[in-house]
Image (cartoon, rainbow, N blue to C red; front, side, top):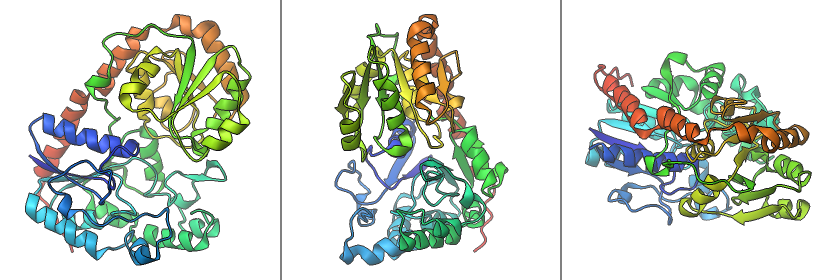
Length: 407
């Protein structure tokens, strides 16, 4: 089978990128021919198909020379359409599997695949199809206003507090409506039941969405637990929605236990200045080779998010190394953490509750944990082998269904 994997970036910039790259590896491992479609970027992995990648669009800089493409690409880009069609012609995929494609690529590629009768599978990584901000957040709290009424993105200036940016986001959301996206997409994959439910609330047909939790590469799963050391850790982007301030506030009140923070982000400078407690150590970004032993030797990992996390890979990676997790009771996190079994849950944004759960963990809960069973549960529920079987079954079902193309 020939599968074309699509994601805006072709390097491990975020969770969606890691998934897309690991998906390509998984398909190749099982004997399939793959190609990858992404935006041009200097950090991209090598690809023999990079000649078909559209030019770089950087929304973080105000580049007047690229302003027209910045404005048009989320809705319709002649360059993206032309290059994607050229790749379809050259590679001739049986399946197109898209991931995070908005803004830098846009759903125009889904429409073009549909027009050629190629089944499209779309793995959801966030809330972009129902929330223009991607994260369903407003004023640092969950918000679902746009699920039913897209004009709220303009009313509340949800995009960077900018009326112009929010109007562009509204235009994008209404142009690529749920009706259009459902028409062009054969099946959506939601890694969590929570995200699927929100998609349905936002107007999507539940029959078009299957729930399939994320997988982990077997190389990241430990053979047996490491001897734990006396610290706990956080791994992720240092940004407000990740609740890192909640964690630091709680950690400063527990000086007897060391917290290691791995990651970088916009809040890094602020956090280092405000929470300069001797028991908190900022380690910066770490690749998996450096990160794995830190996670494996930690007593626990904390995921303190304030936003609707989907199916966070950091939780799966921790459990795969025999490390329990203390997590915020929000989004898809409770689907991975069984309170009192493989970790503990706390009220999101509540530093006092988090402190109490950390105290409880070190005082009594950790001694009850069977670290080996954590690893075995990940092998059972999140192995790449199990994921591949379900995915290929989906692919085959779509290929056996007659294509109904209506222009």
